[in-house]
Image (cartoon, rainbow, N blue to C red; front, side, top):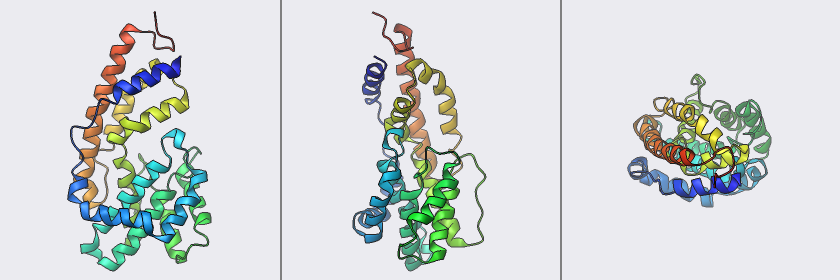
Amino acid sequence: MKNEILRRIRQESATVTPDSLPSFYTAMGAELASARDTFFSHPMILRCREDVLPFLNDEFGHGIEHSKKVAIEGCALVLGEAGAIGLERARRLSLMAMLAGLLHDTCRLEGEHAARGAELSLLILRDYPLLDEEKHMIASAVRCHEAFSPPAEFDHTGTQILADALYDADKFRWGPDNFITTLWEICNYQEWTLQQILDKFPAGLEMVASVQNTFRTNPGKIYGPEFIELGLVMGKKIYHIIQTFCRKNDCSGHIIP
């Protein structure tokens, strides 16, 4: 019965859509197109996509679709730095950012998941045609992608760009994506009742809002806050839907006849 209630609420919440697409998708359209081409054609990326599958948990909202978006958008963010660091370097770093995006949540259900993911990244990348320095740069980016921790500062410019791009692309997901898919997958995985979801919702909205001004790349600082604002608008509407339902029904798990 509880899953049926959650399914009904999720269906109703699916009518809540963003007022518009984040402007990131038009402003950085060329970089995103290049990133998508890399994602679907580069041999190293194709290999990594297969290698990370056993470690990603789709049921917890951090599976292959999440990693795909982070990989593509992290890659695009690095390509946006081409004017500052040169096109050739940006292309190499963007490939590494895509690998970091695919790898960053491979240990998502473990404690200290970012540190554990960094260790696993080095194992997965062991035989990849990358320099040892590049493998460690990717692992460093994975290690410091979590929210609510001080921004990592690196003396190496390339590592800093990778880490910042991975963080920003991951936090883009805290916008509309959070309320379209991630929220419901986590709630279902945790087997929360609708009342528990309702009780947790205000703190969840505050948590999302708290990352709004933490973006680190130049494009992230420009476009990231809009992702969060669009997500918050959706989240407040969904919260109202759940509140309305729970005024009329027993949200502990059973509908009152």
